[in-house]
Image (cartoon, rainbow, N blue to C red; front, top):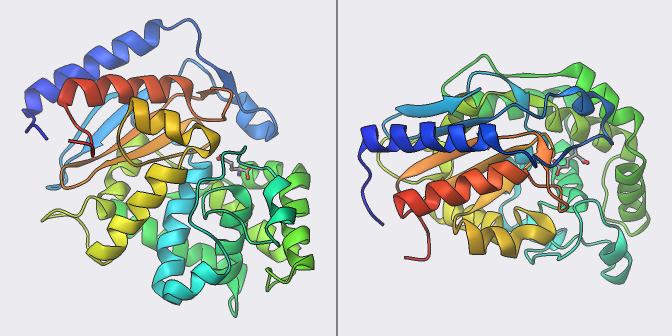
Length: 309
Ligand code: GLU
């Protein structure tokens, strides 16, 4: 991978922001969580955190947004820290090729979700870290982990977003109840889903998210919250499953491990080099940020950053 000059990189981010601001087709803001439907689709941010903690940015990089499914990366790291490989008896490591909230495979595959990033899998991960703890303690641990990774204590849960998702969480409740029927849920579904919607309602700015992703970069200077072997595996899962049924397309176009959220954020990791956060609220048909993906594609091309050489 090519080394990148910081001034050049800053110029490229400004250029990408300019291009994304002009885009007329911006995708559709998620509306199934009513609170997210209120977000202005014209927003755009990109931030790149380097291992020494420097952050280069452009656009609305200091505006908090709902990280939604990007939280699944942090809960997975916590669950693997707590349970190790035992977690894999309850959730798989294969791409699903289906929508984020699909229930189809669950019945065919005996209540074991395909991977920790589809909703069913993330619900199992949350259920696993909830065992023996109160939701408040689990959410406190999650915030502690994220704040430590980002080196920033000003990261919080937006209760209005959590309440808004809870009120419309019928599909996620159905997934949890189905897994309960198959013996793959340890807590009452209301407790697990209540915790899950709060974890998804964590708000961060692109700057904070880029910094928080440094724990997956695995370079000197980055926060050491997870062992290197585990970092590689989390990155592998992000590459294969981080964009639901759009994961292959993301790997083809961007070539970096990434995790998207329906708030329009994407966290992408350049192993050994950088952590990137982008935010544009409009989504493509797979539920991934449309312009966020385009911005990452431009940035990867401009920098030569790719895990594929
Ligand atoms: N909280 C969202 C849900 O469960 C997360 C989905 C996403 O960000 O992709 O529907």
